[in-house]
Image 1 (cartoon, one colour):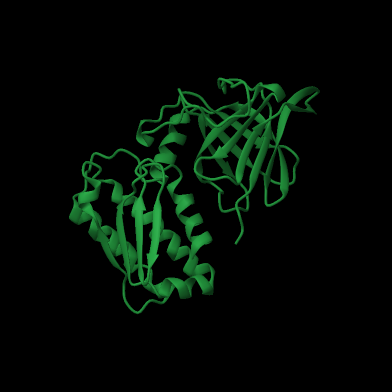
Image 2: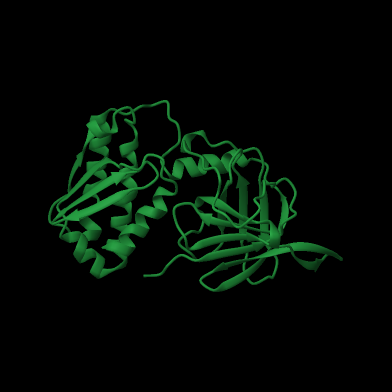
Length: 281
C-alpha cells in the first residue's frame, strides 16, 4: 500500500492569503463544524516554473477558521485534481505555517519564505513534493473565483446544498444501484445487499448519500488488486448508519457484512473512505 505523501514548501508573505498565527506549533484552535457552512472570499494560484512538469495549485483559505482548501493539478498522483480540506498548524518562532489534510496525517503544506531570482527580481517560491518528486512553484495571481473551489469540494464530498431533497426510498435505491455496479469489476455472483438505518440519521436525511464514496472505493480496489478483489467478493451486504462521533467514520467487518457508520461532519470523505479500505481490508 502506498501512503499519500505530499509536501508543498511555499512563502509566508503572500498576498490575499492571511491567517492568524499561534505562539507555538499547535493543532488548529478552531475547526469548522458544519461542512456545508464553509465561507471563502479569496484564493491564490501557484504554478511550476522549473520546466520539468506543468503543475498548478489553488489555495483558498476558509474564513474564520484555521483551515483551507487546496487543489493540485498536473501531478501523477491519486490526489490530482481533487479538492481537499486542510488544517493549519503554526509556529511563529520559525515563521512556518503547515497544513495537514483534515482527518489524515500524511499530506502537508508548509510556508517558509524561500526565494528565487525570476524576471530580474527575487520572488518567493515553494516546492511541491509527491512521491519524492519535488516541483518548484511560484505564486502567480489571485484566483478569480474562490467560491468555485469551495463548490467543487462540496460536490466531490456530496455535501453541496441541493434544492432536490431525495426521499429515503430514493437514496436507498441509488445506493443499491451503485452497489450493483460492483458485480463486474469485483466479479461478484450477485449484488451486495444494502441496508440503511434511517432511524439513526433523524434530521440528517440526506447524509446516507455519502455511502457512495465507500462503494466507489471498493470498486476501485477490485480493479486495481486481485487480493482486494478476493476480500470484497466475500462480502454479501453493506449496512449504513450514523457514527457516534460526527467527525469520524466507524467501519466494522463481521463475517460477510460490512457496517459503515457515517460521520456527518467528517471532512475529505472520499479520500478517507479509500484510505480505510487500503489499511484494513
